[in-house]
Image (cartoon, rainbow, N blue to C red; front, side):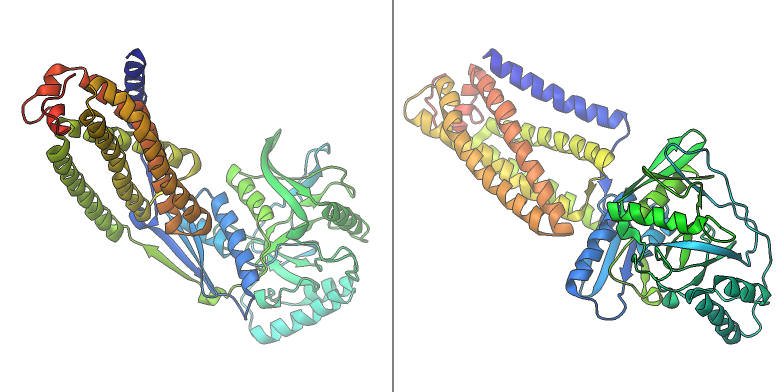
Length: 525
């Protein structure tokens, strides 16, 4: 008896305490795209990529989006297109930039600054034990609109061809004598060619351009290209002096960075800078402080926390096997109005269903129907608190599919009560007292309840592991509600029925008593 009281009181206190804490702290379930709105981005690949390449691209983009902390983001394939749904994104422009960066991440030597519009400090690269980084101030020049874009582009390409063939000084001289210099187009941004690319700015205005060498370890590129595939990991850190980005290279990458730095230091007029490029833009241009790295490489500079985290994400997830056509990329704002209307309709349907369930249970089991209602209420409170906590801690979001899973789980929960009550009927009809029946009936019925719930859990697990998108949300919430049903059944339903069965007034109450619910009017306590 004491054990049942302990189980009952502890369960109620824990669940209601968790619910109260959730409300007091202002937490609530995180809503998905269909319920709170957001951004939907459609990426269209160039050419005819293989199915395997698209699958790899989906995985990498999903990693990028997850790194943004977007809750319940969906990255799926629709034919050859990739659709990225970003619910509740606060900085939508930033999310679109991260998703849209689909080219190969490359490391190129900085050969010379080209026609910047205003000063831009360069970051610096050091070893973990090196001296504090210093900035490399770029030269200040101005630029005007080209008089003949095609002629300018052709003249620029001649200089770039000379640079690619190894005559860097001639290319620099030729470019410096030109009134206008064209920026290399994304379509012409080839790993083994010299290019002219702009330095990225958050306001999307070009403030600096660089003449960059090929993304090769040596002039002949016999050592291979130097790309994001050579990176094992990257993290944002705060060290003395500000935020930094620590880059962990693979073994092959460590050899390349040392060869790369050594080649830069050996130039007649060394720039000592390395450009990190993606999608035809220089994401960062740190300066080397040494020609050899024995440990992880640290990129330091005048970083804010957001800038260092963005660069770390870029280095981790920069390389994709598929190039996407930016001109065909579509971005749509998704309104939450329809989703909320559907949610309201779903909740209304759920309430009506619960009312009908209560009416049915009361007709068949009389006062025991209160146990069902109390159990459903406790399960709902536990679900709300748990979903709110998971949304705050790991970004779990509640979607319409998840709501559907929760509503379906009501049937699973009510089945548990029916199995127990029907077993009670069998025990009482065999001549046993109610007190002995509640324990014996629960012992045998719980095995049936456990088997039934395991079937639901297996189905939910298979759906979650094999499905994608909203189906996974349905499976997760169905599985979560089923686990809570097992806990409430064992620690709440049975103890409560035991306590009610010990009250003669409740047992023999006319029309609504436990005896009436068990179809045993002459039953004894």
